Every structure is written in C-alpha cells, then in structure tokens.
Image (cartoon, rainbow over all chains, first blue to last red; front, side, top):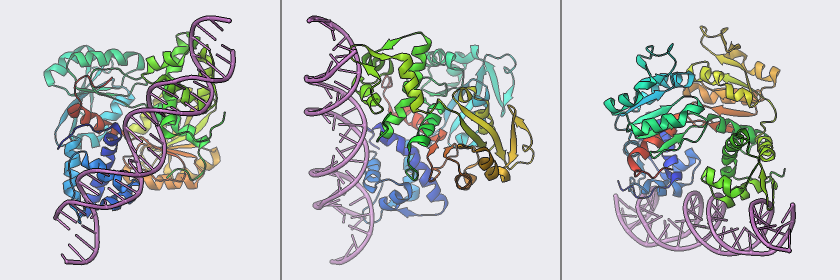
Length: 212
Length: 212
DNA sequence: TAGATTGTTAATCGATTAACAATC
DNA sequence: TAGATTGTTAATCGATTAACAATC
C-alpha cells in the first residue's frame, strides 16, 4: 500500500466507498466493476479506478473488484482495522449524543471517558464511561495513550482545549465547536451550522430537481 | 444580487466567511481588505475577491470591504435574514442534541417539533417542543409549511422518511443517517463517521506539522 | 493627486474524465 | 482465444491564483 500523495478529494471519498462496499458485502455481492459501482454511487468509473490506484491495484482485469477484498483494503487504508482510543471533552448534549453512537465503537473508535468543568456532571457516567473534571485531561491522555480528542465544548474553550490536548500528546482532533481549531496535529472540523447554512442557501437558490 | 452559477466550492466557503465576519464585527473592526481576510482565514486574496464577486461587488477600490455591510450581504445570501421552519424526525440522542443547540435558533432556524415512533417518547417535550408520532409527519409539514426536515432516525428508516417529507412538500433535507439520502429537493448529508474516518486516516498518513 | 485595493481578465494548476494498451 | 475490465497515460475541464487596469 503505497500512500504517496493522496489528494484531499480522494481521502474524502474513501469513507463513502467504504459505506457502499459494506452494503454490497452485506447483500452478498461477490464482485463489482468500476462501472457498476459508478452507477450506484453517481461517480465516474475512471475516477473510481484512479482513486483505488492511489493505494495500489485492488482489481483484476476482465473481472473487476472482489467486494470483500476491496472492502478489507479500504478499511485498512482508513485504519479501521485497529482500535483508536478517544476521549470527549464536553459532556453536554453533543458529547453525550456522540457517546451513545454505537456505530463508532464497532468501527474501532473507543470513547473511553468524558471531561467537563460542570461539577454536577463530574463523576457521573454516560454509557458506563466516567465524566472526569477537565483538570485531569492531560494526565488521562498521557496515562491511557489517547489518540483522538473530541471537542464538544463551547466555542470560547475550544482552542485552549485543543492546545492542551496536543501538548499532552493527542494525535488528532475532532472538533464540533463552531470555529476553525488550529493545531499541529490533524483536525477535522464538523461545522454543523455551516452545513445547515449551505442547505438554506440551496433551498432558495437551486432550481427544482437540480439535486441528485 | 445575481446568483447565476455559483460552484459548490464557493457555496461551501460562504458559511466560513460568515463566521469570520461575525467575529470581526464583534471585535469592532470596521473595514477589512481581501488580503487581511486571506491572512486570517488561510485563503488566497484573489479567491476571496472572486468568491464575493459571484454575488456582485461588495467592496470599494482603495478601501476594501466594510465589515458590517459585507456581513449583512453574506447573511442575506445564506438566507439567514429570514426564518426557516424545521422539524426533526427521530427524537433519540442526535435529535435531542440538535434541539438543544441554541445557535440554530438565533440564526433563524426554528425547530418546531420532533417526531418518533417510540410510544415512550411521543407526547413528551424537548425544550418545550412536542414529540409527535411519526404518523403525523405529513400533515404537520403541510399545516405548518415546514421548510427543512432533519433526519435523525436510524439508517433503515431514512430514505422512506425523506420520500414522505418530500411528498408532503418539504423544501430541503438535513440528513444525519449514515447513508446518502436521494431526493428531488436539496439534501445535506452530515456523515459524522465519514469525518471521523478521514481523521483516522490522516492520523496515520499525515506527516507531523502538515496540518495548518 | 498618489496610494491602495477592488473587480475582472488571463495564466496556472490540479482534479476529473476519456481513451486505450495491458492482461486476466 | 475472445471478451471484459482494469491500470495508466493523455485530454479536458474547472477551480485557483496571478496580474493589472479601473477607480475610490
């Protein structure tokens, strides 16, 4: 698996391939060609082949792609074949909702603890995972070799929390606060309101039937 | 405001401009040039000018952009200057968490009701908004002229819910279920796990310090 | 007026799509 | 072998960036 320089566009399509391949595998499909997959996903077949070939050839001429093998390869590329220890900072509605997501756990994302400043929350448990005071953030990250830090805190606290987590050795940040967190480690900003605003824009500006 | 053909890339930058302009306005800045904004946002100044000029010229040669005016223009483009009646289908953790987001309401998104199939949830209220049985989905949408339908239901129910909402006259769908909902109206798919997978990929594949 | 900065056209870059030889 | 479909190179398309005349 040669991962030289994969463009952001390709990376963002990988989880989508993964989703469709899981579905194909579940319905028992053994093989699929790039053109069949392109029809299902609404992509171009060439693009699909180009994308897969960023990571090495997974197909076979005259046959196409073996669904299970391809799925395993994509899962490996996305590192879904190992566990990612994670914590959630901010035990409010978003933090708690994320903790209840069963899908993440199945995919190897292990949300081990929550952190909050609210003394009424500290000590409680969400889905069996303890809420600690945020004072213990750094030591917990170090002691448990946490990889991913989820920011589900208020906007004003987000950047400082990111800095603290990075200094404690976190490897990546999943940010739900409505600002662009800056960091030396990879950050994924989930801007829910940005997405809602784009929808609102399209509501008024797209002609009927323009969307797939 | 001439909105001819604005590319998806430009549309997705608009909420980001909006966020930064809100901040600039809050800290009392009166004017900003495209190059100053480009430095703050990590974009190219030409791109910023090109983006704004998709919607008409908001600036003034030799001066730059008046922050408040520009903010008002971007808000209008994103239709944040009027109210968007919305409902949430699925009163589980995600649905409830979205209902508790105060930011959306301030921006004109009015989540008026929730819907669920669970009889233990039906009749309860979340933040003052009633949870109805999903049987009443279509009539509620029609009677209250709901624009936006949020899908916070399980994957298996998502597509059928989308179809039902569209047939009842919904104008756009904000989908949190982990599949690509197909629809004749605009859809914004918020794929949380996709975003987490991208982060996991970058964790292993990005060299230190590659991220901004 | 001189200086600054936009609006806009032109150049570049990168991503998508097409084409086809390789090969199962 | 013939047919099918990949892997990969080449062409196209669109988005980003640069340049500069217009103008406040």
